[in-house]
Image (cartoon, rainbow, N blue to C red; front, side, top):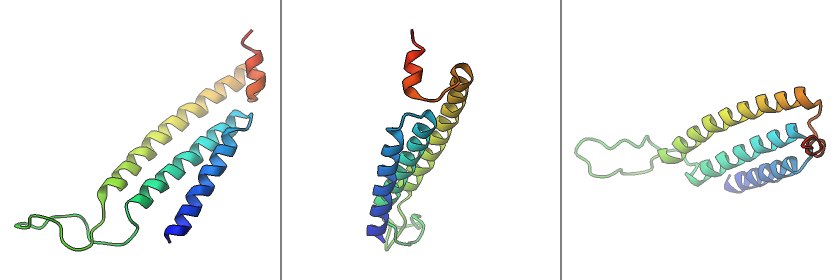
Length: 115
């Protein structure tokens, strides 16, 4: 399972980088989204994928015993999803405004409008 996750993470990182190197702003945003998903999967994979009990310490005990789920990667992934969604929503609105003003989403043509 870990090998499959490593392959999926690598493919997502590779396709995200490939999409970011294209000249279209829409493909740039899609590439950033793929990179965000790959980073989330990497965090998820670092927290071990085995099933376990909730990480609750029973009364009177000083430490957790047995197999338990690690809540830190889950909290980090949830935070990253919310931040990534907000960033992508802002970028989509910004790209739409640029497209309305310039009538193109090609990065090379946008450089020519600076003059």
